[in-house]
Length: 288
Image (cartoon, rainbow, N blue to C red; front, side):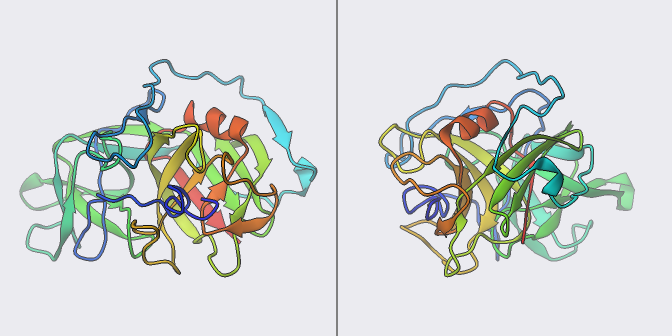
């Protein structure tokens, strides 16, 4: 958020019911190739954003850079190699997570089929696959929660495979966000990143769920909750210190500055553009 998903629901969002593993949380469900859906609020989460619309039609792109919202020339951006696609797995049921592709290996926890805030299916990035004993298929997946960057193995059964061609890069030193599709930059914008005392965590993460906020909520109109957690704030405003990409409404901030509690703030037009295109499981790289 400006300060976190919880310092008003962003940045360090209070994802109250995240599925926790023995030492972290994670979740995944069938992966869709269709446009992302903005999750609906569950009645029990009264403090969370109001129910959003479900985006049912895929957004189409021309393949050209839509616009550059930064005073810096495009050619000044340091080269960043992005894979043209990322395999995903959507969970159709809850899955146990193991340290190795074997049921007798250490159990890391349980991944639920749906996200806690919106009820949307869990989609996890797949970093590897293997056929184990008795021909059982296993997927090596990225997991949300602490420690950041954690991975584990789940059974391939009850999952749906898909791919995404989107990738988001957050450049902390330049205070800029670049959105890639098919390895090509589609949008480049300045952003508000974490301040020195509460920096935006670095590493490779992914989008957990999209949340529509009320007009009066901090960070409105939308937030893309990430698998990343603050390395400084173990909890924030009642939540687990989860970070997110969100708007500037009711929180402000000068684009191109470092002033948040760890979240990445974007102009409202950009967060709206993102929520129409970026679905759960899309990789997000944060680097200095």
